[in-house]
Length: 478
Image 1 (spheres, rainbow, N blue to C red):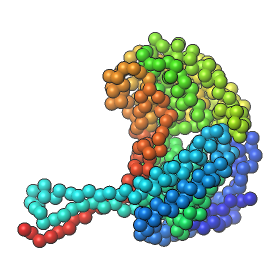
Image 2: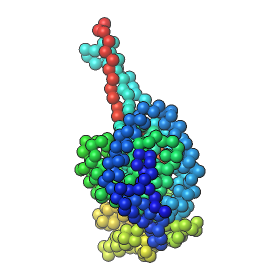
Image 3: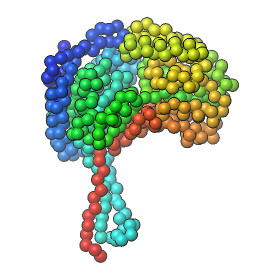
Image 4: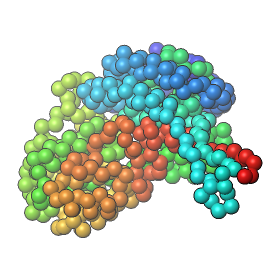
């Protein structure tokens, strides 16, 4: 069965008549077939969004919230089906996919609440010289209008909802361009909003190649806000083409974890074994670099490697599989080459490194040069690089020593050192005695430096998907 595009709340075939298959990265079987959107489909979605935005912004927040709550109920009811879709098209384990799908309803409800909380503030205009009590000033917020959301493959449910749910809650129309590898999950979630009674024109989902569709979407002058999650290179391309509009860009990372001599080694090694290999390492906040003190480097590796060896690869649909596939064989080959290059440059592969199709075995690489590509570049695969640093100053310098700044973790019992690290590590999220791979959906989320601009999390996203206006009421002079 061929899925259809969603254009302004209506399901229809692409004007191009072209379709493409979505295949499992595990065994290559066809999971589904989706249309390839044409330029005419983009124009239809934009025209529908203009109409939908005008309707939706005039819908009271409590009515918007009711529709979103119904969508959340449908997401809950359909979570098992959505989980199977995630696992099939993404290659993550059914266990991980079930957890992701189960968070969908709560994320929609949280966004719905934040969309009702658009408070303004009063302005003390009489504090300004020359102004008395003859004026009242205050601020109000309103929806931006049309939001374009471009989403990645690695969390095809949550990262779609982190964009569209706050945008809808704030009263905007949304056009979604999901990752080409994982469009079926986005379409299934969009159906929850349509079936919940979202008005026509408010939501569109366009499937197909990002290179063809993305430039047209982000450069359209009718779009006021672009929210993108993906690579730093593509983010820079979007910023260059978007023109004068609001941008949220959640981009690349090479997240560090510092392990100091007073750390709980068992806790740190267990957390890194989990935080480096969830979703086969295809997480922006995955542990990529571990920076250990020389005094405990050997003990840490002795604790970490056996835990990594217990991670079981295989069929993502099996409950016994604890790590799934890379999104494609070509991406798995890239990760394999990066690991091999690190070894040629003097690092030691302690476990893993082998590839079978799109599966790369969980890998630990020791003695990694912090200046090498294996540390500097985003890997987005199931391998952890371990280096050493002799003190807090050198550890923090090494943590900050890449172009990225999304998230960091550190393990220590030294409160003073932890406070120093909080202040000096340049990362948007910092975790004390845990790894970066932790996120509550309500918290502000976003990076520094080449890791992007703007924040996600429903409260932050709603704020960024609204405009603030200042209103001054002028009375008679006293």
